[in-house]
Amino acid sequence: MQRYQAVCRHCGQATLWQGNREICRDEILHHLHQDHGLDPEQAAAAYELREQRQCDYCLEAFIDSCTKCSRDFCAFHQGDIDGLCGGCI
Figure 1 (cartoon, one colour):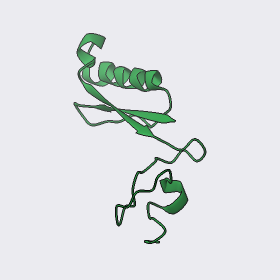
Figure 2 (cartoon, rainbow, N blue to C red):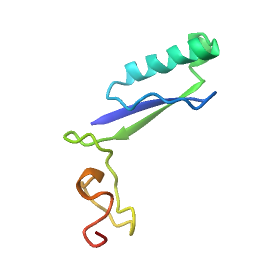
Figure 3 (cartoon, rainbow, N blue to C red):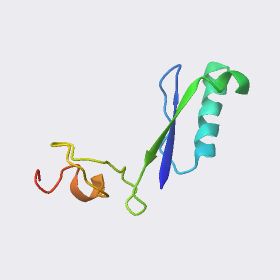
């Protein structure tokens, strides 16, 4: 599953992570219009859309390797082991 976050390139304000790309985009476009006075044509280049894989069950972000030794996790994620592999726990 994917989740998305939009970040304003003017002030750094970010939307909450969410599963719907269009809602995320609409929230940042509203911010750009209200706070920076940009119309939709100008706003298209004024934000960055971030995408991240997440677990379908606990909604934690997937990570690909141990945060300490960098060994590959295969399909483990942060919610299971707090970012550490079995050898580093």
